[in-house]
Length: 190
Ligand SMILES: Cc1cc2nc3c(=O)[nH]c(=O)nc-3n(C[C@H](O)[C@H](O)[C@H](O)COP(=O)(O)O)c2cc1C
Image (tube, rainbow, N blue to C red; front, side, top):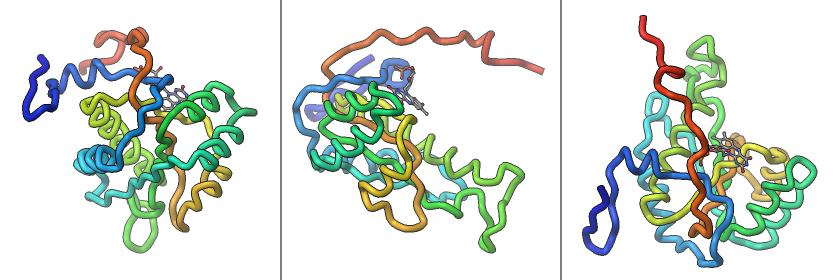
């Protein structure tokens, strides 16, 4: 059920989760810094390992930086090049390394090693995509990119690693949901 309050449209959690789609075509409408801040604020409420909150975002609107990242990806997959060239904002999602899943002395807390920093970034990223969707924005998470070149292009601070890219803008398409597995496929009871 959608409802309006104070000029904003709200939806319930189920609709938000099920209705979000990966959007790969955007209008030329800019996304304001204020809206980006609101979305990041909502995403900051995502859970994280011992509340370490290691996920960071760099919003790239500079066309030359965006195009450099897009062109560097071309040999890997031209699809992402086109998405990045057409998005008003490219979010570089990064994570501060060595904290989530680590003890204070730098040793791993569990047998899963570095796993939990990416796990945290993934949770935060989905929260961000849902918050964006509620604001009428479209997003697509991108995992195919040249990690080293992206870090260079945005001068990623020391001690951080690129987790993913997200294109974000006002949608210029409304794709159908790709087929989902059923609960029977996904869930086992013992
Ligand atoms: C970790 C991850 C990496 C992804 N990488 C890409 C990508 O490089 N390019 C792309 O177009 N979509 C990418 N996607 C989007 C998926 O293809 C998409 O989520 C999936 O097909 C389901 O569609 P939906 O998001 O509309 O439900 C990625 C999604 C995730 C979670």
